[in-house]
Image 1 (cartoon, one colour):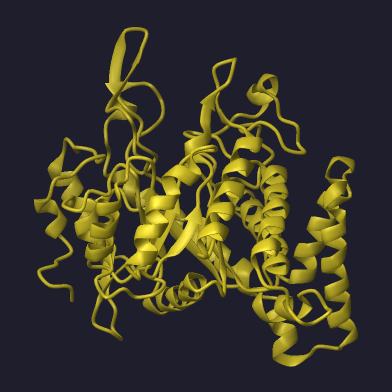
Image 2 (cartoon, rainbow, N blue to C red):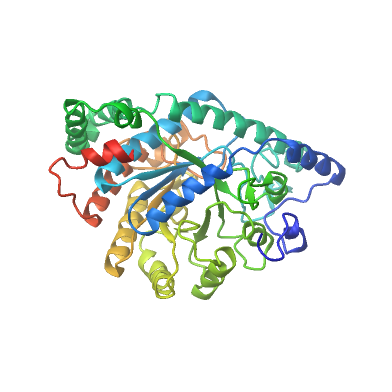
Amino acid sequence: MPKGWHASGWRKMPRIQMPEYPDAGSLEVVEGKLGGYPPLVFAGELRRLQQQLADACEGRAFLLQGGDCAESFGEFGPDNIRDTFRVLLQMAVVLTFAAKQPVIKVGRIAGQFAKPRSAPTESRDGIQLPIYRGDIINDNSFTPEARCPNPERMLQAYSQSAATLNLLRAFSKGGYADIHRVHSWTLGFTDKSEAGKYRHLAERITDALDFMAAARMHGDQFESLKTVDFYTSHECLLLEYEEALCRIDSTSGLPVAGSGHLLWIGDRTRQPDGAHVEFLRGVQNPLGIKCGPSLEVSDLLRLLDVLNPGNEPGRITLITRFGAGKTKSGLLPLIRAVKGDGRKVVWCCDPMHGNTVKSANGYKTRRFESVLAEVREFFEVHAAEGTHPGGVHFEMTGADVTECTGGVSAVSDESLSDRYHTVCDPRLNSSQALELAFLVAEELSKSRVPTESGLHGSGELAAQF
């Protein structure tokens, strides 16, 4: 147990980006109920994820993290879960082939309900109400009743997360994730005339799969192509919920956050003496730290001291978010300080949050070209510094939304209103997300040493997917 740590110790620390519940009694009842529920994830899964992330620290694996900006109660359903899972698997196959190594698949799902906000209130037509903070806290409808923080919503978030995880586990282990099925979906994407430029890479993957079939793989090798490890992640923001789901691992006797596999701390809540860091320093989950332009080198090193005093590989993923054209100046000092201090981290690029703009017709959006530019800058900086570009982090959905512009789907400013469904930030649609995977694959193929085999990664697809 970390020295001086207790699951409720965060309550004595400065807290920000959290609601004030008007009914303390109702909050206490909800926390008590959640405390008696089963955890959503288990310690053995967390240990396996950290082992895989430890490989990413050394350039032996690559992290793919993606999913909703903010999950909602209204859009919950099996089709949405399936479609997002499917696109992430398609992206993972392309990246696995390019990287010639395992791709760690982590969804922003089954817990991503709370969102930090830039202001505590919102005004419309002269009426001021509390800001919408995500479905786990309040409702997006602009009424006093809807915007009042309601602790009962935590129970609905738990129920939805449990159902989502149940379906994801069935998909990942029940045959839906078979690599041949997944690749056939990708071939459908490249059959479209506008995506034909990615056909060559898709055909190389087909050749690798055909070779494995010709080699008559069987037994464990064959079965490994039908299942995947899939993990969940969300921002650790609503600490009453996180504390209520904290459990003691019966194997190690150490605390774990039972709400998700990987928890990250946001750009607004990473104060070393704050409540969120205090809670996270004690749990054994792999952790992410969002690193934006406001993060000083000294603060990052202090955070690493607090959150990973033993410098355990795979414990910390640094998720950088600077914006296209600003990545080199923002990332370079962080890389040099972390590398010079011998810290073991996974470097992951979030090219979404630094590239949010307002369109001419007033919609918040992200340009596909800007997202791609930041990814390329991320790889260039790591190549120059001799460090490992360890992953990418996208806000995306399997649905055919029109929230980000550009890409082969050719979403324009004028078409944003067609299917703009997000409750918070704009997401890549399925075509844009898969296209980015092909383009990231190009960067990965440059940064990875080619295999000696002439099979162009067929063995890795068999053993690593």
